Image 1 (cartoon, one colour):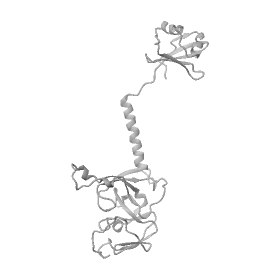
Image 2 (cartoon, helix red, strand yellow; image 1 turned 120 degrees about the horizontal axis):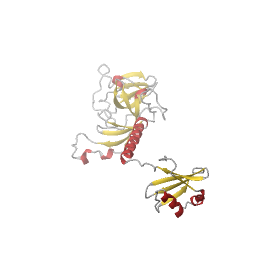
Image 3 (cartoon, rainbow, N blue to C red; image 1 turned 180 degrees about the vertical axis):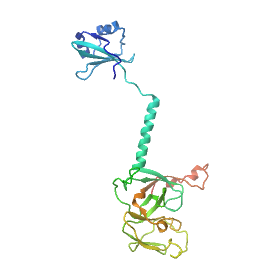
Image 4 (cartoon, rainbow, N blue to C red; image 1 turned 90 degrees about the vertical axis):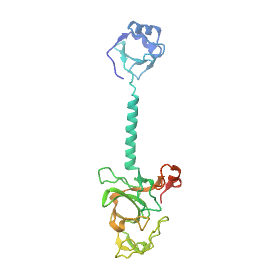
Length: 290
């Protein structure tokens, strides 16, 4: 509350009894009338904190008056009512808060991603939309290489989203095959980690019956290699159609953006938009990613 101006007028201290009882007597109303101020029947009085006097609110005229006891007299000040925010300002503030919260959540908690290719089929399909958990591995502080403490480190079998090492502007999604210090080797399409065969993911697949020799490609025969410090070896579940660590090397831990957790939307590119009921893959909605 701010004062409009200095003292409007003063009244005798004998009115304090009325004020203390939160009563606006006719005599007090008359004092206001003598100053050209008409208090409606809806005017109320309340006692403020000790030492700050009383407050009269007139709901009809929207006027407010502060009464203070000063040097034996009761001085009356006009007060400006609280300014109500305009609807435009309220909407603008709500939008700013919502955007700020969305940015914070996107940066530190979860982020949405779209599957553009078939390298993770049949675990993830083209047209899947998923949420990635960013805090499980520790979210990065924007514009720095500082990573907040995470719940745990990536493990073999996790499906992760990361910046493509050869072009950080692109996001890739693959499955972790081996972590720091582990030894990886592929023999005739079978993956071995620390000399033990790694089970195929439930929905992984091979689309080429051929087994390519090492001299021709790293696809089916690779390694052995040891994963360096702060790095991961990743592969796509569509083993014959995935550009992954077999071709371009390891994923630095600093490139990791999050762990794929749940599908929130999925639709088929082959089905036209007008056939929405067939286009949406209803059974994949809210599907946990494993």
